[in-house]
Length: 333
Image: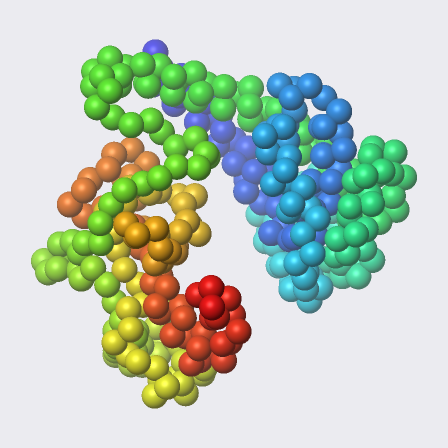
């Protein structure tokens, strides 16, 4: 009965897919406001009763994000919020409860400008003071982003609860049953699923067969310029002027990207690639198209992790971006 129950749960999930997809903005400020409103309420509860992302083991990293002094750019925030709201209106309609609250009778651009220009959440110290004040401080705040987050909070919680009850609980139970069946069939010959915890994946730098030929294990700056020039710098082969004008400064034989046999799937971007000497030699940013089945099975002949080479990073930083101090720091000099 497990496949039937999972199919029913997925069918039910599809009825609210638009809400899950379009009730978002991609805005750092909106995300911070939501986190603050939820944080002060959730930390008072027993760990098992908290919303996802607010369990005790996650709070340190969450607080780090909430209080990060990294700059937030108002112009970009306005563009992201306004653009997403315009898409939301087109997909959900102006009578959608989320949009009625978010827009408050304004146009997407007007709402975005009002929120971004009126908030103080870009100040990390302001955010910290607000959180330290607890629920009372957040409830009393007249910051427009916090006011909005408070109004949207019931809608967000209802959707999270509905998803947990109707979809995730079914998937989790089915996953347990599938896991038991796999261990019964294969014993301990397979390794466990990813659990969002730190882990090591072993592999080697290795090319693979592709489209009747062989994909090399690495690319170089030569290849970057060859592809860009061959496609007249159009579409995905466009190069910024910094790269066009700086070509003669580079050692074009420098490795740029490389592939390895490591088994990864979505969520691994940003992971360091470490060689046998313990040196960082790359940074994972993707998988090849053949690796997409990695959600279900690892196929070693063609499944590849794609990483940017540290040599390519330092070459560009030194000769295109004029950042010698950063290079020295990265190299520990």
